[in-house]
Image (cartoon, rainbow, N blue to C red; front, side, top):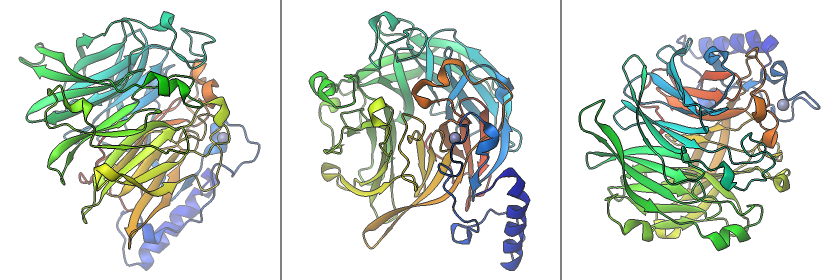
Length: 482
Ligand SMILES: [Zn+2]
């Protein structure tokens, strides 16, 4: 734990520990050398003002090392992506319209905004680099949920009036200087748009995967004939897995489901790419993606898992194969509805070594067992990097969790947290402050790990670089999937 006034004590302690160990480098402490007592950041300040940054300046074994207020633009910052081949970050904004900024991350102590594009429509739900790190894909959806301005009063159900032909995905070329050029768009028939995107290279061809609101996963090929002008997005396949009857019957669902997010990983066990889909109330699905153009693969998932006792909304999934050949899948729901205020949002560790028999082997929940209070303390996006999870926990900040399996027992242990809580000196982001208890100070939307640094976005105050115990800034081996 640290408040600002205690920071010098922490630093002196760290320096003393380094000297005692005979080490006088700038290396962050190893997990076994953690020196700070744990304090629950969600319980630390009883009756505090969630909107006051000064009351949320808390860290444990992690430290903010850089911040950009992203020019204090009056938007709600959300999704973040980096690429291992360079240091330009992409930061999307979700409100009041869709767009994103490029940011120079080469000096974590001083991230610098480079360029910005605002489409003037919709909701910028996600942004991703192409596999070659030269293109950006932006997901655009309609403001279709409760409280958002285009459909006031709609309760979590997509409103046909809010659906727009402008929603879909947009392709941009990014120069080496971070300058953004708008190249191509794909807009399906009127619908509520694309929520999440992912990109991956398979057999020397580049693909864009889209989680389509209320439906499944759309697959596109990114074709670059004569860069940058000749690039285009070509639809190649669709995974329609939405079971309308079951989705409407699901408790707390409001009848609204569909794929939420997906990850593609080159699997070293099967020696083929696998598509992992966090499919809302339908659970987790895993597909063989050897040939994205094969019309049959969407009909035959290799694996499926859901918590049969509870109707969780599956939000994010990543996977990793350990040195011993175990395939770990980490899956997180999002907890947001009025009925779920007391529900404690979990992260699940699944053993997916046998995809035909995926087993739950570990669960993590916030140490104080705080209910989600809609989105306030829900888990959100995370990255799985070398057996460690970097988690965006909304008002709970950024958490770092180590996953270990010893003699068949899997444990998930927190090794640090940091609340990125620099006061941006501007008003909270309009409608987002208060919707689903979102927009507190801070509200951490996304996290990525780039070259040993944890980067995180706060909805209101911008982009943060955070040092993690045991990770060295500049280490290219410590890089998340995004
Ligand atoms: Zn608070």
